Length: 430
Image 1 (cartoon, helix red, strand yellow):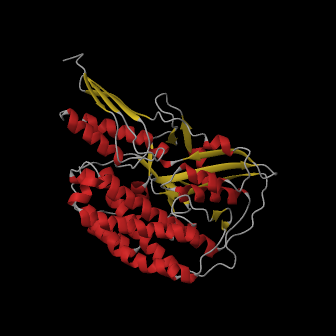
Image 2: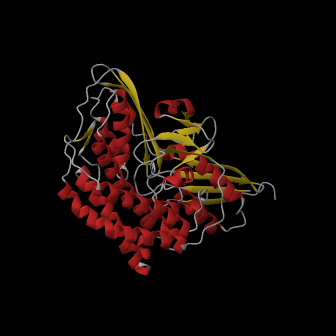
Image 3: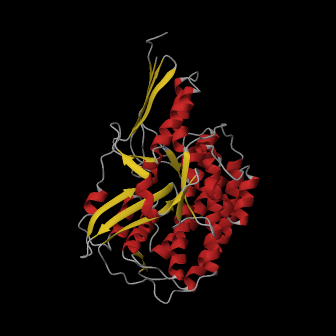
């Protein structure tokens, strides 16, 4: 009947990071809107970076996120090193990639076991998972500890590493110091492969996304800490051209900026990386993906948990490779002198492409800073997917539709402020 309204409200969505609200309106069987209302106050990192010394952003921006601080450090370093015309020695670059592998392992495992898996097992939280699937959770804890061990050894500590600086590191570990990591990672590889097999057994809705995809690409290896930006439409461009293709804009219902790729919504993150780069995975990771039912591409957001598990296998194996070939650099980092220039840097945070841009003055002070995190880039795609899923499941009860909306959002592992709760959901039906 025209004019009838149905309202549904969820006060908080657990198992994602940050605070926000989702407002959905349905009238006469049509979804009028699905707005991801991020009401958390702006944190002004870009503003208070202005006037700071050019060597400070790696330490400052790592505080944006306690889950993926290395991503912020590496993107910042890439941008500032480009601005200053510095090229790093290969051993230092390999050490940076090793550090990033530790973050991928720790972050992916956190999402898989503690945030996402309960959705597929019909469980409300990780406490219930521990009660019913204790051995699986213990496996996840062991894997996460392996990732944290890399972060601590190479970065100085597992959260907000302190060993990273422009030009490399303050100190490079010895081969002997990395040897215990290899022993732990060999055990972790078995756990990672078991994780792929475990999540592959979940039931997945049949969904296929039509968004443009955006990720870094390297022809020689799976892109993590740097690379050329590539889209699913076939375009490819350098980090310095990011502003020419990706334009941010403000929407009334969110304190976070939205982004468009050449005027279209798009998605970055595990699905984009895998779809554009699966050929660059290691043999073991590709074999595990094939055994898990993944083809050369994956556009089902519910299967993103499988892709993250495959990427965990890759990160563990890549870390082992880097440790096996490690030669301690003659110097832990290159000395960097400031100059008046603008630098652009990108890397692949666990949740997707992370872009930094810094304008420097000749005095070494930052004139302006721009940071575009993956979650803000994905917001338009998330809202579109919510509208699509809701429109196809209006027959569901309030409780079941609410659960579906929560699952859809957790597919993307949004990281808004690294807080515990993220969402209020309100649905008006008519």
